[in-house]
Length: 243
Ligand SMILES: [Ca+2]
Image (cartoon, rainbow, N blue to C red; front, side, top):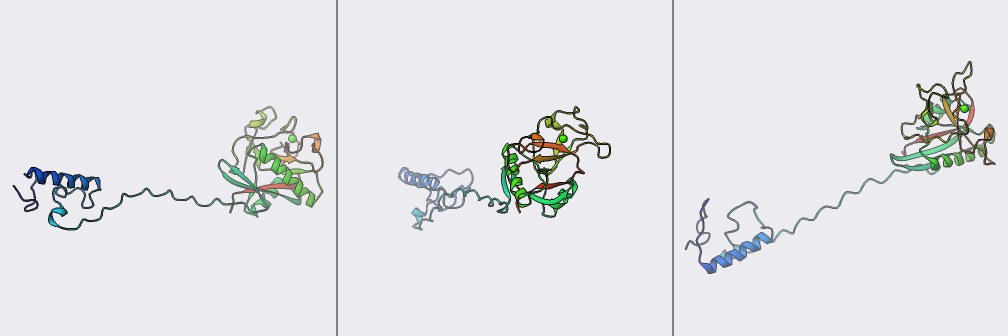
């Protein structure tokens, strides 16, 4: 019999032990394996030498490592309290309608940019009606004008005339955030009226009424109209990501 541990087994050596010792060693070996080893993993000698054999205290078994809980995502940024909050698939979007003394589409865009925003697009029907309601709020603060609200849209270059493209394919949203082609056009819009000096109606307004289900031209409250970008209107809708 080779005393256990008297000389470390060499590679390919098979230790010879008596059955009783072998049984005890086997139990210890199993316990070590089941307990995770508690020592140097990969040491081929660790299972054949026993601390019990030599009276050394057991090294405490290291508890199995627990999976770390997933890290919490950063808290969602919120829109300012007086801006509408839209939870779009592509992220949160904040919108507010403002009133001014009369602005072209480009001037309205500059007014939005002065607030870190841009003229907003409309993602869906819910947004469309919430923006219309906010436009009525803004209108009631300064009740004058026609109830036209500048939005962020441009006629596609390949759709210069009314018959060039289908109504839902005629304009692009310009805010860099709105996706899709939800355009709640008024009847017969976008009609692409061409004026000699102003050219095509390359921009878009939303028509709102502070009193009635119908707005200008008898169009439904909240419906859209293509307009000449040079026109002057009092309302404009800004959009931005939360800051
Ligand atoms: Ca029009």
